[in-house]
Length: 95
Image 1: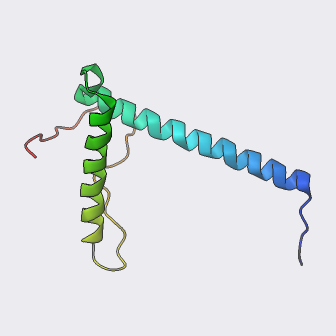
Image 2: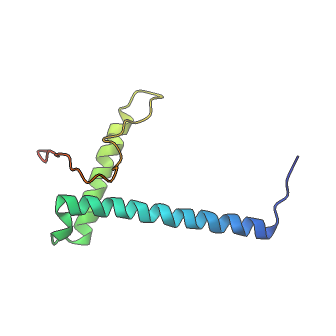
Image 3: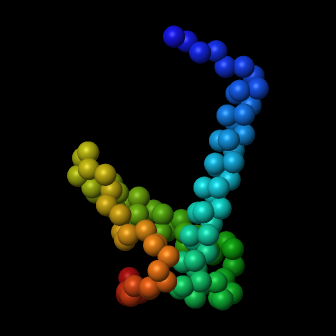
C-alpha cells in the first residue's frame, strides 16, 4: 500500500532531519573541543590555516589506513567511545 505524504508531513520530516543534523554537528564539535582541551591545543596560538592543514593531514592518514583494511571488513575503531568517566589514557606523541 502506497502512503501519500502531504506537504506539511514532508516539511515536518525535513525539520526533524535538520534538527538531527544540527545535533550531530554540535556533538562532533564538542568531541573535537574535548580533544583539543585534553591535548593542550586549545591554549596554543595556532593560525586557523595551520589548524586546517593539520586536520587535513590527520584525515588523509586515517583515510589511507581505512583503505588498507581487508575487503568487506569494517574499519576498526581506534579506541572505545568516551564513556564520560573522566579517565585519560596515555597517548604517544612520538609520531
